[in-house]
Structures are given as C-alpha cells and as structure tokens.
Image 1 (tube, rainbow, N blue to C red):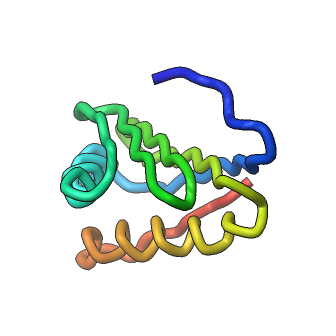
Image 2 (cartoon, helix red, strand yellow; image 1 turned 120 degrees about the horizontal axis):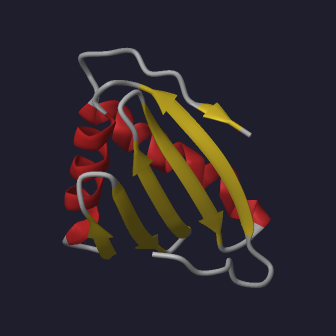
Image 3 (cartoon, rainbow, N blue to C red; image 1 turned 45 degrees about the vertical axis):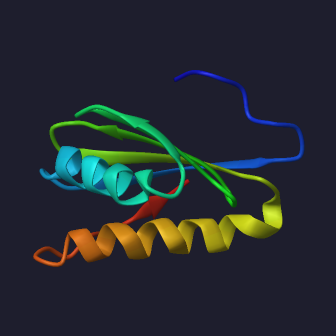
Length: 100
C-alpha cells in the first residue's frame, strides 16, 4: 500500500482518538467498496475516490487518516466527506478530528 502522491496533488494527515479505530476503518472501506477501489484489513485501508485517495491506519487508540486530494481545491471537500462518513459510523461517541 505504498506509493508517492501524484503530481499536483495535496496531502494532509489527520488523527481521530478512539479505541474503535479498526471498526471504523473497516466500516468505511466496506461502505465504499461497492463504488470505489478499496483494499483493507483490520489495521490498514486504502480507498480510491474521485476526490483522491484515503489511506487509513488503525492503532489501539486512534484512527490515522492520510488524504491525497487530486488538487488543493478538493481537499476541504475530501476531508468533509471522510469526516461525515466516519461520524455516521461513530454515532455513539463524539469524535475529534485533528488535521496537520
């Protein structure tokens, strides 16, 4: 699951403190698997969307999110799409997304 971002793209890194990181990673990948190219296991995932590529890593206490948008103009939308989907899966807890 390693590759360099395409030319002209923008990458951002985020983290979400949660003990349910693996669950949310798998739910997000399964949710989008019917529409987009995905690959995942319990600790890592990759989703190729029209807005760019999302790479997820689950640790015991956080979900790490690396987004590579097709261009800088798409990054905010890309972040909002990913956040809204994860928040739907995590309706029982209040999540805090921290972007670098």
